[in-house]
Image (cartoon, rainbow, N blue to C red; front, side, top):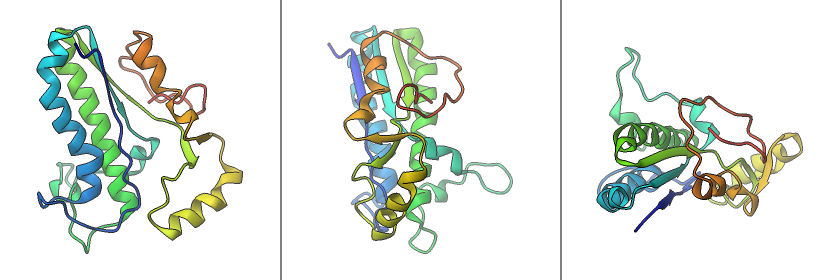
Length: 185
């Protein structure tokens, strides 16, 4: 049986590149990998019910839009060309897709005993998340003294573990302050 599946990836500030599948790397690593894994394990999760999927996302999803000017989904924004690529936007888009995926997964599978929640691990100023680009390293260093919810890699599991172990299911929630004590999306 598989009762808990945690989907967590944080490819951040990567230079533009394509995967073997021809998709932008940040999007494929941070989102499509989760989507594919859950699809492969969906029957196992349903047979193991009650089960849950926890998708680690990011508060940064709030700073992005994946729609075009008419409000329709613009698929080219999910896997942009090299000329249209900016690492931060790629990360933010992938994390928005994580949340949309988690919500839809919950809608589809909760009647079968599989719940899904997205969670924000907290502000990762003390992690190695920024290691791929020197500009991010500089910005993270400068921002640390002014950040309310600084979280170490060790503490970043705080919001994830209770969802895995407690049996809690959050439905129709709104943003809860991003602090070490309550950084849930």
